[in-house]
Image (cartoon, rainbow, N blue to C red; front, side):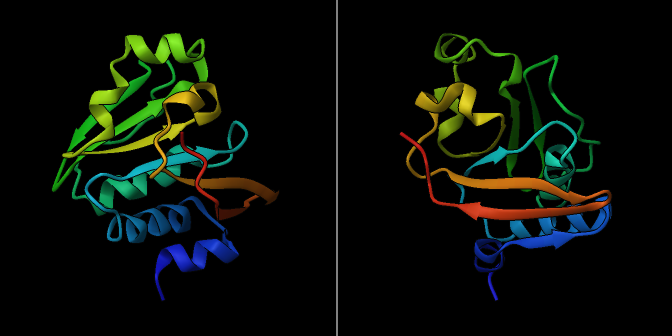
Length: 148
């Protein structure tokens, strides 16, 4: 079964490694023009999921949260751009980052806190909602596309 089909129903992970493994499987199904929006509170596992996506794209560098740098670029079999929009002041902040350049191949863009730059999110973006069910147990599910 496709990972996206599983995510439509929701996938429960019980450890950071299970979340990374899900991200790794997801990477195998990403199109070259992929934009993934990650919704969820602080500490819910968004960066952990991105670490798995990176691993699935053959990226060897350690992936960390780009909260203070705003975005990080990683090179593997494809180029992954990991953007954390938490500190951006809406669309004006996004425009200064030249995000449009990352919305087409060869980039795979993963955005944490996409609601802060919702006017920049393309129609083809896929949204994943992450939540904590109980300590150590996370639920990840695909939502309807919400791009512009």
